[in-house]
Amino acid sequence: MSIEVADESGAGIDLDAVHTLTAHVYEQMRIHPDADVFVRFVEEGPMEELHVEWMGLDGPTDVMSFPMDELRPGDDAEPGVLGDIVVCSAVAAEQAVAAGHSTMDEVLLLVAHGLLHLMGYDHADDEEKAEMFGLQRRLLLTYFAAREPGRTDVPHPTEG
Image (cartoon, rainbow, N blue to C red):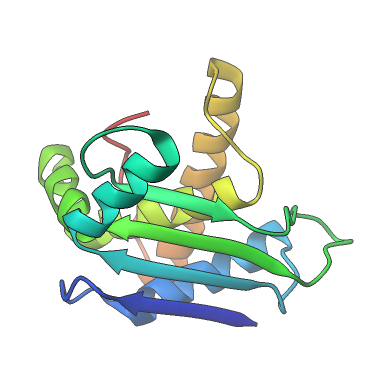
């Protein structure tokens, strides 16, 4: 399995936790273990550049996903390149304060969210949003339950 994680922002992100969550999502969603993904954390400037270039929107955003081989979950999953996820550490920190949880919880929520986007999930309408956010919640609950016995809460998104 090729899960690469890099903190280009210098924010001190727990890269081991990000790697462990990503591996957990792979297992839970039955993504081929040899599928490649790259998760990188950047400052506001580089994120704003990506946001303008790919979405035509000003300002930095929290997370962007760039799917590659359109891999989908399932028992018949093929190896390939799942894609890239870019998280803005500063926006994650701001959203964590607004939501009342830790920055690391927000980072993990954003990575889970980005991974689901790479797998083809979206939240453009209410039905899609319910499915995607339900999966996101289940993935985070099972991740935290395995690492922090007794924990029953998961971070909630600050935006939809």
